[in-house]
Image 1 (cartoon, rainbow, N blue to C red):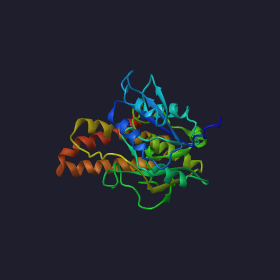
Image 2: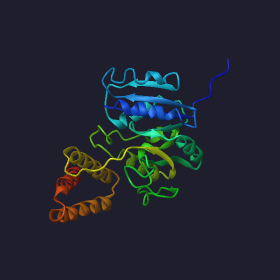
Image 3: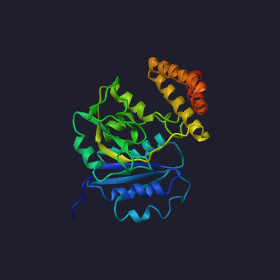
Image 4: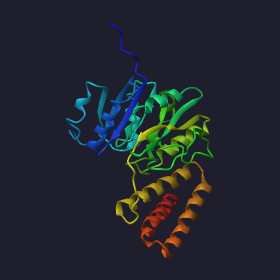
Length: 279
């Protein structure tokens, strides 16, 4: 009997608390022009939460459904990656979707000398979502990577990822609830690994408008600022930390007179930065 082709791409999906969105992600892969992949679902939900939703895809894809007894996005990604058979790994958000040519374009770019390729997230209008990205294909550097990456768009060689992994102290559900991707990028660049951003590699991701006086948004800003400040301390990025703190305080002064509805959000930014330095 002829052996099946080795898997080239392992798509690792950490998921928690969502039902419809992971199904839409799986459905988007039905249209992928690249087909040599496996899917690893790192399921952090209570037992049976996804029952009946994933099974229809079993006869379409190679799927491994891992049921985890812990939470934390970075830990789930690392655990899922330990089961990967593919030479290349991808870690899409569970509310993202692949475009038909996402994997094909990324894998065409991912070759020596690059250890990883990043793309961008777009909304249904193909405009940037989540953050504003660069408009040209660019190699990342320690001093120039703003708008050139987000961890959910990474395609990385498995051997490279195994050498670094995500720091499980960072990321949703961890002590510091963000910045796991930023930390990975910094560590790889410090080791002279070459990382590429391409705006042609696109994932759909819904827009997340900021409602400044919405309590969950204020809590999210606190968590993000706490994580970013801790990241700065970890990597001795003291100037970046000081700059963001000064910017935050200037915005608080301006908002006190002009946009008071932002004060709670800005105060959460300030408090997260201070708390990271205190503890």
